[in-house]
Image 1 (tube, helix red, strand yellow):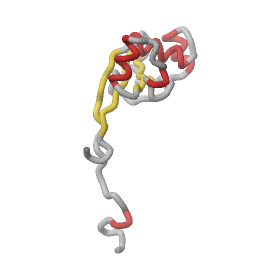
Image 2 (spheres, one colour; image 1 turned 135 degrees about the vertical axis):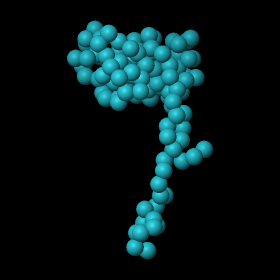
Image 3 (cartoon, helix red, strand yellow; image 1 turned 135 degrees about the horizontal axis):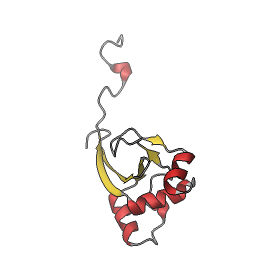
Image 4 (cartoon, one colour; image 1 turned 120 degrees about the vertical axis):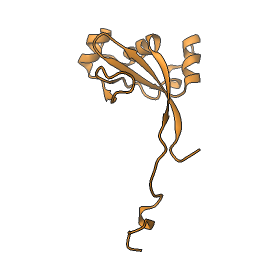
Length: 114
């Protein structure tokens, strides 16, 4: 595997007012939670943080969703409850993180004076 390259998963929910994303640890853990809710949610999500893409779809820039945005969409400003609703109604999407480019040690780079 190239440096920094990894597969990640997220759950995307297209709401009435905005688009939302929750990052999950793995697609397998998410699928397990969907079929068996006894799996602790802490083992499924990377963090209990809801991200909004401001109507730019699943590939939009992720920004933390405000309490007002959560309240308008989900009827609650509690992020834990919003995470559960997104996981229940959203769609799983897997994506590749890009490999990192560049020098391993800038002090040894060409033109560093050495």
